[in-house]
Image 1: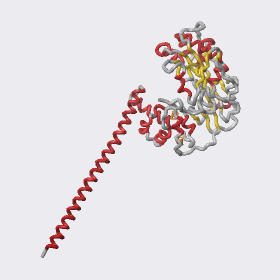
Image 2 (image 1 turned 180 degrees about the vertical axis):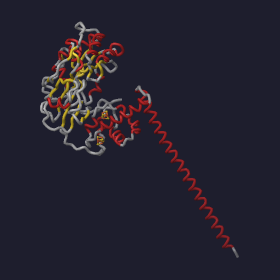
Image 3 (image 1 turned 120 degrees about the vertical axis):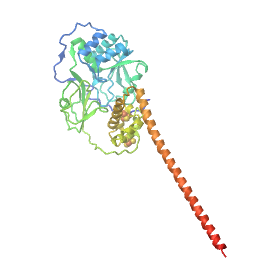
Image 4 (image 1 turned 60 degrees about the horizontal axis):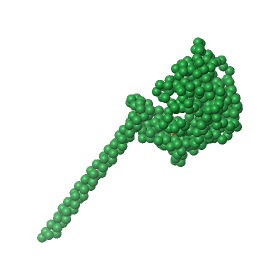
Length: 411
Ligand code: SF4
Ligand code: SF4
């Protein structure tokens, strides 16, 4: 079970991007060829159809919005809808900026989903621990409750607490809600994504609406690169991936940030000082330093012992490591290896995975016991040899004694 008190408090660095209005990168919008005459509030079938035709990707999880709506209406039956404006990674504010600066469209998208799915409970979720803001996050946005998730990073683990743990909820990113509102009211297809461009190399940090497929280098140039970055990250500051060539990497529908850093620290070899901070912050109670070690040594089979499949890729372990080891990268590599092995052996459900891990661990334990048994056997044989040597020695001594007595008694 994850321990929610674990994690870290991070400085958020969301300003000055968040307070500024969202900028537009010049691009031409696309529209449906033959728009249907839908009513102000389409039915769930119509809304799903619109979302599919508009090709809306939900940046919350990278899934097609149409699939999520269709699942919710047939099998999921959620009791509430949450607009995701959480943005608990440092520097990123692309979802929160939409909730604050494009509230009309976010509220419209949320109501469209709620009416179509006949759901009364809706809210916008934000992260509470942001202390360096130049603007205030209100308690209500367009009459919709703003729910603040407090506590340490990663806050996504605590989404369950909203609306109650057992209740099903549909979580949709604010970007997807905005595109849905545009699709219904303006017949627009999603051709853009909302991205935070920031980091200590960017002169004008901002949230920008970029066309999908734009090279990352153009996104950086749009916000003016003041220093040559040593590291460019696409995705999140904690969970994103570092890229080598920004001109060949393209923005996708669920890109949420492009961050450029000048990072003076030098990369070191395996240099764990055993402080155990990585274990203390891991929300899944894993042992990142051990997983790192075995993955780096490519001893992947050892990973079954450490439940690596539970890693939620939050990046906290790398962030706190004083030895500056890329722990999360290695843990994720190990996790992918184990998951691939499991799917190759036909394991699909979580309980089957647990079962497989258990069996693997049991096998290892048996092997160790076998080794122990063998060692016990060897020690028994050594004892036997020792005893027989002692008895041989004793009989030699006895023989010698007899010979000596016979010689002494000889006339
Ligand atoms: S990335 Fe994985 S191992 Fe590291 S702290 Fe997060 S859950 Fe734990
Ligand atoms: S945080 Fe880094 S130095 Fe500390 S135990 Fe983990 S791997 Fe080692």
